[in-house]
Image (cartoon, rainbow, N blue to C red; front, side):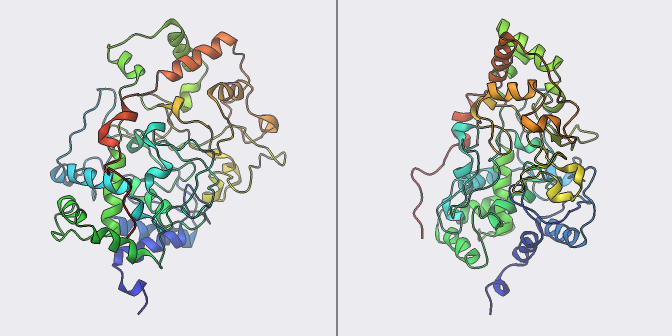
Length: 423
């Protein structure tokens, strides 16, 4: 009997995703298409694997979990504590937010036993003190493999319409999470057929986990760890990582006032079109909430590269074209949130820009090097004259997006007094 034959059906389906789907963090084969709302992790896996096999065109806009599913509210004991300008995010109908799931997900997020070799947890690449990034240009997997892209921030991640830097098919946190766990190119958490049962047993052997799983998933009173429940719990914790106490928020709520420089920077941020890609209130693209009527799923070419005069990006990370196969998607990436941007250097998908000042200089120049002449560059990216004062004002405003409470909030911190020992 092989290891796989012993596994639960959900793992088989998740494995199908791994075989057929590549990560937003990792390289991916042909196009995928998501046309139906996810009703479960297993259903998601099936749909995605099927879509990959037939390689249809990528979606113009993803289908999304229903915001009106009564079952979500009926099963949830979660209350969103949000300012009035930030509607709640959409939550998959098969994974309603609960206090118990968020609590379990926090443990799992910080538990290195969740990786194949027991050395890496989600937090390894997502450190709270750095707004859940890791300060690296390229993520580093549990086996030492470098990732072609930089880990993304997780603050307010529940409001994204798609996930990772450049994958229009990943439309929920639950769907995204299979990538770092099971991905092989490159290896991140390193879970595979050889160790998948062992990892679940590590968690089952810890007597503290059974009551947490049972509380989070009462349909299994024994509290047995499963990959379906792990994915749902960690996704719930990530969805609860809310950052809404920056100076920007305090000003918007009438609790603070901008300095003159910050106010000029805010005005310039809007007049120079920065806000067209980094929209309020989350200062990113692809904002999605229960109030969203038409989701924004746009991606942008920032003119970073133009290797062949036709707009080519480096082969290890060419953008959305990896998913869609469309030449026009070369160099296309999602605009990430600017909340806590002061803490999340280096910048761009490949960490190739070190400071906020360099970012502003790049945009003011209309791109970088030959990338300025890329035929695929966004028309929003054109040369602009910024004085030294303009530059200082923009940076002053961007720093008002830092939420110092968020990076110290004990609700998001490591729950373990020390790193758990490997079993």
